[in-house]
Amino acid sequence: MTIYSEPMRNLRNTIITLFCISLISFGLFAQDKEPLNILLFTADDLDKHTLGCYGGTVEDISPNIDKFASEGLRFNHAYVNNSICAPSRGILATGLYGHNSGIMGFMKMSPDCKTPLIMEVLREHGYQLGVLSKVDHSTPKESFAWDFLYTRQQLGNGRNPDLYYNKAKDFFDMAKKEHKPFYFMVNSDDPHRPFFVPGQELTGGMAKPSRTYTPKEIEVPGFLPDLPDVRRELSYYYNSAKRLDDTFGKVMQALDESGFRENTLVIFMSDNGIALPFAKCDNYHASSRTPWIVRWPGVTKAGAVDDEHLISGVDYYPTILEATGIKISAQLDGKSRLQLYKGKHQKNDAIVFTQIDNKAPGRPMPMRSTASPMRGVQTLDFLYIFNAWTFSEVMHYTNNEGITMRAMQEAARSNEEIKSRVDLFRRRPVEEFYNIKKDPDCLNNLISNSTYSSEIEEMRTVLKEWMKEYADPLFYVFENRNNEDKIRERLFNLYPELKKVEP
Image 1 (cartoon, rainbow, N blue to C red):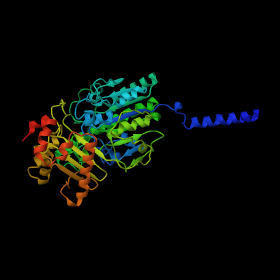
Image 2 (image 1 turned 30 degrees about the horizontal axis):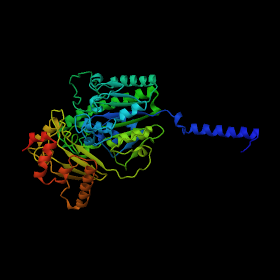
Image 3 (image 1 turned 120 degrees about the vertical axis):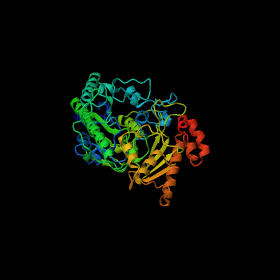
Image 4 (image 1 turned 180 degrees about the vertical axis):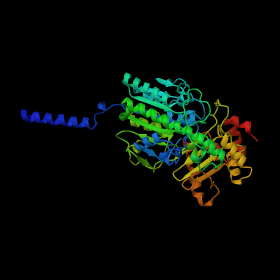
């Protein structure tokens, strides 16, 4: 037993006290740290290259989002795993690929899926839960109820920045009153169709964007032909993208005024690509790429850019769990990318898998139209696509109609290059392979190019292993992709709707 003199005892106590104060100052006592708030802001049908911070050249299109990017971390290689809004958001909420949760289209989770929603986990740990617009698409379970909820109709059809500001303020005030950390999912309906057309009557409380654009002021993405009517429709899209930026700025203003900014992790992303041919509802590069910007004061470095790592929507759930320090026993399909948020290197072995389905096996999709089943494998350099249905024209939920498609069909009468694009859009080969480093617009299918035979075979193997590991119902179809007799019956069993378009 050690015996201290009074002076030594006082010195010892002083040292211990100073040491404890130091620990508290550095935040090493968890009980003295405020819980982390989460704000997820999603755009609807936004091509990431629209934004100035991602290289967009249209004047003044995204000052608020660009400012946000300058304050945080921007990922250059981020993707969603399904380029349709409801299943894309379902992956965020469940941490599971669509065929494992049952959310393979516009539907809720399968009753057999026991994985809790990320919102359910956060609620169990004391979080207050709020959502603005896209409520059905953001709520994959019928029995789940948010604490704070406003629908699209209550927000000017999801297109009124001032209403978003007011409701965001209300939510933050509620969080203060309840003394709870929060999970706030803010969904803009811009730039989803209908686009803002100057001169048309505003209905349902929609607001005008802070500026509009003419066809001469916009840029045409490389996967579309530069035709006058294509430019016209794109100008309407850019009007809606501008209103999206207005809305984002208003929500960030409400966050700043609330006093929660310094303890809130904010993530900005889109649910899928633009609602035009070769983007939304497809498996092309423009279909799945998304802006992914993270601001976490004191953690993310201002103005940082990650141009090295692949991340995707299925990684969102485990990343949020690690950020909040919450552990669950349920198995998730993605992996945490938190180290990347902190600016650290993470083993660069990520491959992004994408999928499009028109229903879950045995469960019809309650929509007026459907989409053809497809799978994709995305690396930093290449994109491989497997099209399961090749016996007739491709079915699309969207993009079949509209100004752009009509313009392409008209131009195809006299332009062979545009005709080949229209033909490809209507009917796909079994396999497609693109060098996205050289051809990000996926204009040159290299599946028959012997130069890439080893890379193509590697991507086939990777997809096959993924389908087997994650119990993809299309596994048998992929294995027998060149045998029409074997796969036709299986496809009809999985997707009876395909019989409607059987040749």
